Length: 104
Image 1 (cartoon, helix red, strand yellow):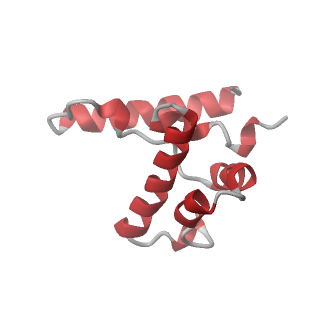
Image 2 (image 1 turned 30 degrees about the horizontal axis):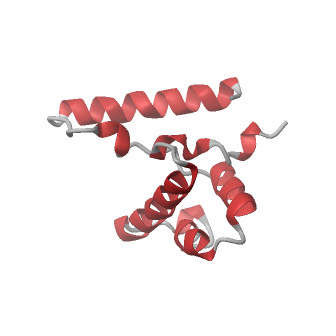
């Protein structure tokens, strides 16, 4: 993991964990935390899963990240990330691996 990815992921985890704790928490917050949805992750998911329509139809329900303009669209993208996590046998936040910033 590059320093940039590690720092970004760590920051995201801390922010989300803080939100969970502040609002009474959840029984198992680690299952709810996902990686930041950004262009680099999106490109990587597409490259790795372009032949998996059941995943791409969810993660790429819109053509641009700026088009994620409702919670419903956001939830569909997260559902796609959950499918990736299930496929890999990992936690949702670990779906960061296809992030294009990892490629050297």
